[in-house]
Image 1 (cartoon, chains in turn purple, blue):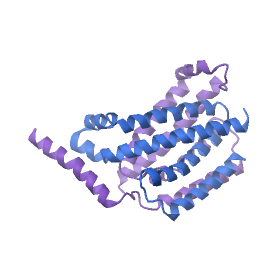
Image 2 (tube, chains in turn brown, cyan):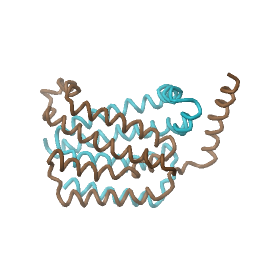
Image 3 (cartoon, chains in turn blue, purple):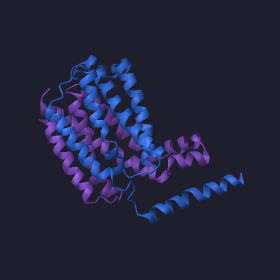
Image 4 (cartoon, one colour):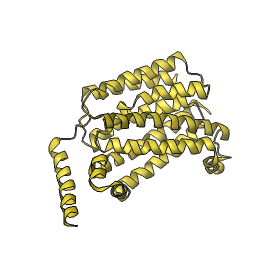
Length: 148
Length: 126
């Protein structure tokens, strides 16, 4: 794992949690979605909080895809588990949500649980399968480029 | 909104997000390390490779469904419950799906992690 890869995992954590909190703030302005007002759901896309939330989640998505390109799905998700803690913290500070001691204990359990995974290898796909896919992927591209 | 409706919304998020995650993880592994591909062939090539992958586009569709499920469910309850609960259950569902569909080696540590996460979700749901 390089510093660049750790920074990408950090970006997944920060953009994901802050994006979700912004979306929640925006949805509060809209109110509860029911069978009578669901047709107006698209209008939430005009809410500034929802727009900022979507922008943050786009950044989250780009960093998430980058991480998935070199690590297992079951590594990337737990390795970015601090987003749960960050989300609870942001919800308490900015949305004044009631985050109880039980909630914090739950967040702690989740973080410890995913910590088991984060200390393991980032990729468990068999090496043979991986090297084959890299060989078939990179080699022809290099030769094509040099020919051009 | 009742707790049952909130949990139905969370279940909808988990199912669609897990399907999207598995499809996108598969697509990204087929493309390779995006950083290496970008250094080799440039950013435009990376974007072209990603958006031209049918598996990625299908994954994107499921992620969009998960996103709208999240929007609706967030309007019913607190983000500090919905966010961690849906993400944690998605993590557990992903562990099963990654083992079955992506052939990832989900060892005892990863299953133990799933138990801890499930316990955390139970506390969050109280």
